[in-house]
Image (tube, rainbow, N blue to C red):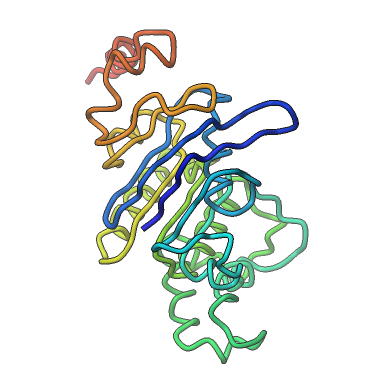
Length: 252
């Protein structure tokens, strides 16, 4: 569904993504993992058409450079890592913006099924009772949920998510990741998400790309990528031992 070939990104003279390729197929959830500065968010930005790149990215066989922004938004839902609410829109108004690409104009009535999609997105993210709240009054975690609801309201075929659990407490981390997994069960869908927490990545991802210094160290089925050897190479420590040590403190 989504394919990147020889993808590279430079910020000035500094290369931050080097000759990276990947294939995202229907039903797959690719998690992008690696230490800070590995190029994870840059990869998500390139796939989301927000970061200039060299190489080629195709969505369903079409070069994304040739797909108009409005059409791309109907097929790919993009969630960046951070959001700032500048204006005092309501939660519902912000979620409704996710339907813009599917309207014939600015009038919501031209969007067949849009109201139902918005209601569903609000319910799935636990925001129904907050739909009338002013965005400027929300916490960071609540704001993140609003913009995730906006992406769900688009009803895309591919989700590209940069740290979807950013700012969320444990309850909503579990809720959002479980929700994404349920969303993925419908035919013709796929997910790629940057995930900082390796436990979440291991629990929910079907495939992984392990990055370091802008390069793919390993990619494929998640159990074959997130091995003790690969993680030690990238993180410079025994990640498995550290995780076991952290888990040992939780005793009944």
